[in-house]
Length: 79
Image 1: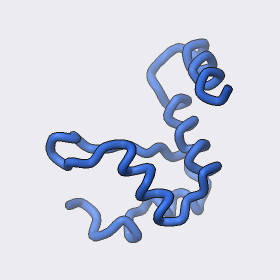
Image 2: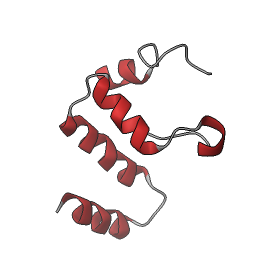
Image 3: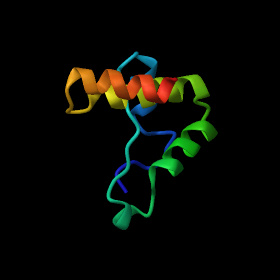
Image 4: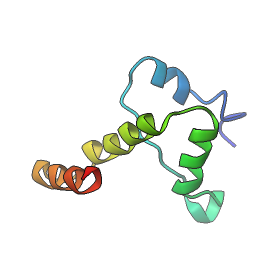
């Protein structure tokens, strides 16, 4: 375990300082945690649905794909 608890994770300090963040998981086979669990935990810890949408979109923006692919993907997931 890298961080003592979710509440003590630096994610929240970074979020407070407007750092562009994404939610990810470690190796599912090792940690037993998937991305759905991470998003649910974020909601339980007080992140809003709108903030989670922003974080999800940050993942697309940070992806190692062409700009046009990012735009297409963002259009698909955001309607």
